[in-house]
Image 1 (cartoon, rainbow, N blue to C red):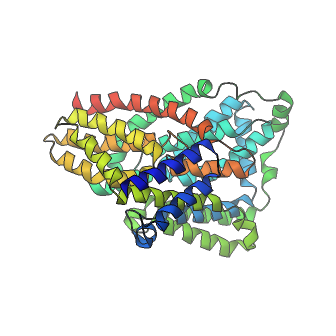
Image 2 (cartoon, rainbow, N blue to C red):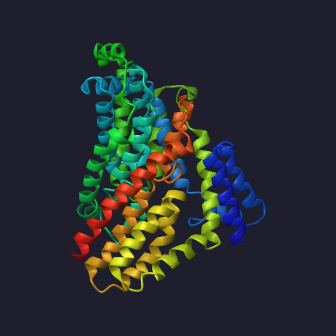
Image 3 (cartoon, one colour):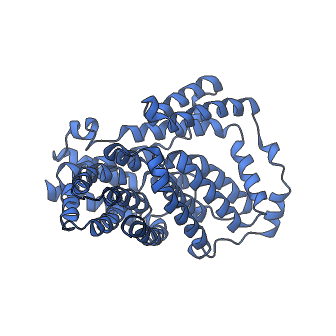
Length: 427
């Protein structure tokens, strides 16, 4: 069963990477094979919290997609797009920097999937106005989202898992993770001109046309915008305080979507058309395939090998966890990876006498998993969502187009994180 699970996962991954077939077909086909031959059953695929579909992720996405669908009817995305372009003087590079910073900061306080769902429509409109390709901008934003989301407990789902397992608070993440993420964001912003060189040329006439626009005229329904604003504030408050309220973010998103649908007065076709059904089904298939790797012990064995190789050296353990987490999180979703790795890190941390160095193991896991999610197009949930949005907008992003940029950013950010861990916790 181990060999079968690995073979099916690798085959599906190759099909996704080479784009020989549609990624949805590859993911659902792989899941179907694993279910048909009994590697996983219905209990494993649909009901298990360890090996099954993460319904919290699916319904969080569904709720936020519906909210964004309603919000789109107000014209607020056009308003923000024109505002951002004008503040940047119509310069594509300055537009990218501005949107990247907005995305990264927002991702620290919202989950990164919600952030890209809100920012991507703005990006598409800005690029349409300026007459430039949105692909580099969308890639830059999702990379920034994964970096920014690492800063806080609630910014990235793996952090929530780590916080729960290690007993780390929101303030612990702010103290230990936010400083290095600020540095990472500065480095990322500085390399944008090199990473996306050749993407910043716009027609002067298009720029002049954007600068002459009045963004206030873009708002089509002020009353609906006010309703959306109230609901979004409540949803964001629910995200921030979900641990205190004991309500999962997915429930918060669905409640917000339900309330907004009721008060908006819109027809179902007006907001359901924006739901990325292909993305949701792709996630379902991917979760089942990764769950098969978890059930058969593949991920657990890899993690055990990594921890056994440290030989009790805390610094070596920190660096190994950082590197292994970055690589593995780039190829499998970082949520099941962290869920599997957390008990092993907990065992390893218990054997380290110095409490500061013991805690450093958890920060290396968080940094490796969060930053490693940028490596490939399927490394993090936000990546998959943006690829789906881009495809629907007629500007598809290929697996390799994303991965070429993401791998470079992952290497740079992990290299920056390594000396931080050494200097702060061992020197």
